[in-house]
Image 1: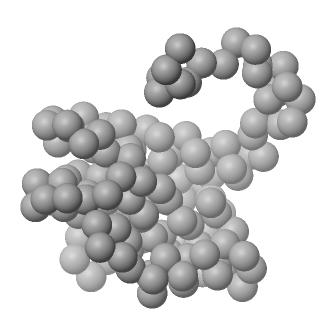
Image 2 (image 1 turned 135 degrees about the vertical axis):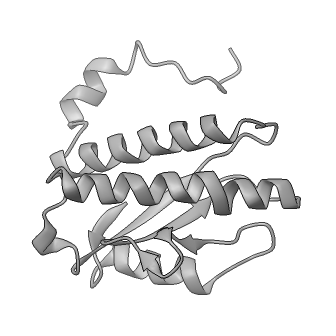
Length: 144
């Protein structure tokens, strides 16, 4: 989600930072220690972290990928620089519980984050696009 820090996304952003639970350590996206991205971005886990390897994957390649994607979106003009102080991002991060390859974790999360930002800023998909594509849609975890 991307939106004004004074609106519902801002509320969700603040809630994500203050309402931590076991296995779900939400964290700010940083390019390097003490260099948080703008717009301020919180990464939230979609899968419960159960061990130190998963924690390192989240705090390492996944978080780094999100931070780089946000910075690239600003550099590319997808997010206007003059809006960076007014916007916040809440970014859900999925890392498969059997994931082993840190480079894939980075690449997948980078691409997903950058594309999601581009879509959000462009108002995509439109309702018409969703209706037109719903019959061809397939989800990998649907089970049939």
